[in-house]
Image (tube, rainbow, N blue to C red; front, side):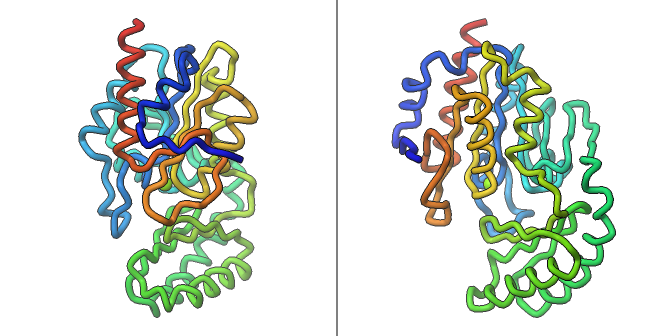
Length: 274
Ligand SMILES: [Mg+2]
């Protein structure tokens, strides 16, 4: 798989041509590392005001649907982004928040709620032994954040997470300085973005679709969306050295700022075409 590394973000604009002119247009964006620069702790992350303005402009255009796609809970991701009128796919697709604020969880995860709570106690005990770790309870999943932990302690921490997952029947999902325990159901950013795109009519031939993300979990969306809609525009944000070397995204940009330039171009182009 080859991805075009774009040092000038507007080179994407030239390459995609009219591919984002269709209606409806679904703009689906990961939050952390994509819109919000990576922060020392999850609570410190925020989407810069300049970026919020671009997102608000996009969300207010007729025929444009904005969706935030995050590993955070849907309510948390909505708060970090601070955009009214957006869809939010939270918990890597387990939760869906509608633009009116209603949050629904996928029925398939409900039988596993008790297992997640059992795992929370065991994972919290394990994490307590390593300074700089945070266990986040997202009800349907658990996140263990270790960005501030001593790297020497991380392998044992991963062993402990795997052990807890094994004992409670959960799955382990790795991200950027985060490990997640999830119910054993096949819901991920790929299934969730395809389902929402279908619901919005964004997989139709006259529709348009853009997805951007920075992490391993976003690769599921790059692959699934390109398979379902070959003219979908997929962009990986590769900031720093943590990003995987291989990507299923068509384009790669170097930072959340570079992505914002692409989104600003798109908002201006759609506004001008009205
Ligand atoms: Mg991310």
